[in-house]
Length: 89
Image (cartoon, rainbow, N blue to C red; front, side, top):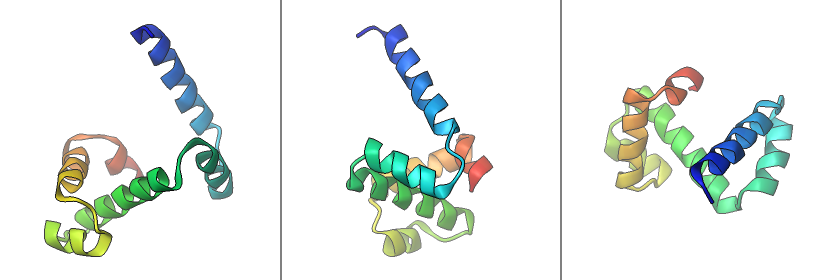
């Protein structure tokens, strides 16, 4: 599969997500799209970003969320340098 086709599919994914307007619609969509484990991992990352933003230490976040240190580091970098967590958390 070429990159242009993948880019188009990703754009369609984002367009579909942008049509969701309630938490219940999100639940239905993501339950169809993702495994329970994938949903749990995304929720864990949101919680970790929220706790980091509140000023908790890495150890405190790991203790409260059971997130791996590698994933927490990635969340922290995204919180510092990315755009999504800053805007939506």
